[in-house]
Length: 280
Image 1 (cartoon, rainbow, N blue to C red):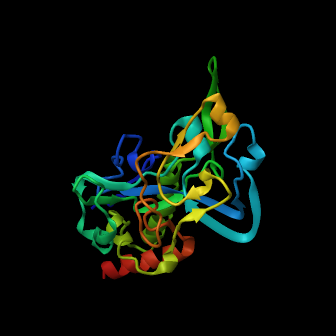
Image 2 (tube, helix red, strand yellow):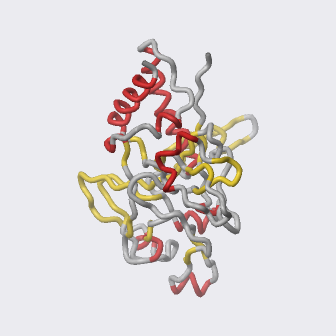
Image 3 (tube, rainbow, N blue to C red):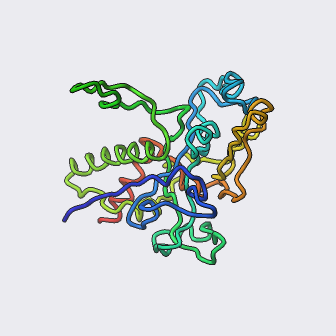
C-alpha cells in the first residue's frame, strides 16, 4: 500500500481569496489535502508599527521592540505586501464544494456558516510562518539568465506557498522516523491532526493588536485595501479594511490558522503517540 500526504497553501487572499465575497482556495479545500495557513513569527523581537507610510516612514512602519527570550506568533496579514502584490493575508474559511468530513467533527461548532447557508469543510488545518518580514530564504537558480548561463540568487520567500512546503518537510522527517521504526508512513494526515488533544503539540495563534496604527490589528484574516493616491500616501491614510470581514483569530482551532503551528519535538511526540494508538 502507498501512503501519501498532500499539503497545499490556504492562499494569500484572506477570507475572500481575492474574490468579492467569502471564498476558499482549491486544492487546500479538499478534505484529502492538509491546508496550511500563514502565521507571522517573531523571535526575540515584536513588530511595533507607529506609521502606515511604509515607503515614506520605513523606520516607523517596520519598527520593532526588543522581546529577548520570547517568541510571538500572530496571524499573517502584512499590509505592505498587499500594497505591493495585491494580497498578503492568510486564506481560510468554509468550502462551498466539499462537505464537512467526519474527522472535523471535534471543531464542527467552530466552522460557521459563511453567509451562503452552508457549513462545509473548514480550513486551514494548521499553519506555519508565512511573513515576508521574517521570511525563509530560498535559492533561485534561474533568477538571472544571460546567454547560456543562469545566475542564482538567495532571496526571501513568504506567503502560504512558502509555509506549505516547509510543513511538508517537517512531516517528511516524521515519516522518516516512522519508516525507521518499521511503521507505515502517515498517509492521510488530517484524521490524525483532529485527534490531538494535547495543547503542547501546537503554538496556538491568538489575536494581537500591535503598534498604534491600523495595520497592527492582527485579529482576523480580513484583507487590507491600499489607496495609492498621493494624498493618501502622504497623509498616512492609505490602508483600510475590505468590506468583507475576516474570520476571527481565536483560542484553539479557527479559520485563520487552524490549530496553529506544530510545536517541534512536542508535536512530534504527540502525533507519534496518536498514530501508534490508532494502528495498534
